[in-house]
Length: 220
Image (cartoon, rainbow, N blue to C red; front, top):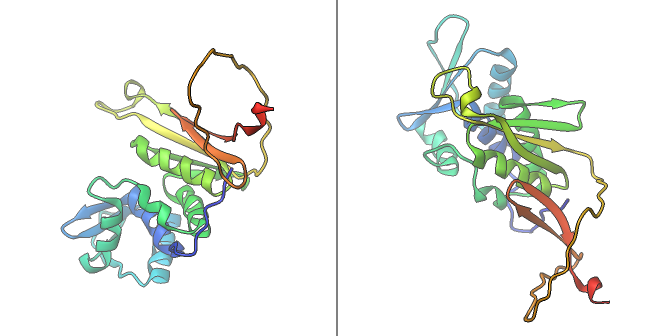
C-alpha cells in the first residue's frame, strides 16, 4: 500500500520488537517491567531480545511452571516512555524506518497474535488503538490490513470482559479492486485535492484503510 522512508528515522528494530513483547505480556512494577510467562517459546524469545538489545533481565521467584523476569528501572525507562502509562502504541512508531516497522509487525505474532503460512499476521488487543496502529503501519510498510471486533464484551467468558479487537495483516503486495458505487452531486465552490509525486495516497475512514489517488484524471 505504501512505503515509509526518511533519512532521519530510527532503525532500532530490536527496541520495537521488545516494545511488542512488553505491550503484550509486560506489566509495570515500581519503575521496572515484570514478565510472568508459561510458554517456552515466549520465554526463549524474551531472553533472546533482551540479550540482543543489551537489556538486563533478572530472573525472579515464580509459581510452579511459570517464569518470571524483571527489567530494572534504568533499562525499562525508554520502553515505558514509549508506551505510556496505558501501554499503548502511538504515533511514536512513525519515527522508525520501514525495515524496523516490518520486523515489529512480525514480532506482534509472537506475543498477542499468530502467523499463517508466512502470508498473514493476526494481532489481537483489548485496546482498539493498538490494532489501529498495527493496521496503519502495515499499510505504510506495503502490506494490507483490516480491523474488526473479534469478541464483544457480552461474548467474553469472564464477568466484565472487555471487547477484543483484531487486526489481520496480509503480506501480499497486490490487491484487486473494482468500482462498486459512485454518485454525482451538484456542487459549486472549491474542491481541494492532495497532490503527491506517485499520485496515490492512503486514506482511513472508520475501520478501513484504502489506497486512493489524485482526482486530476477525472477533470478530463
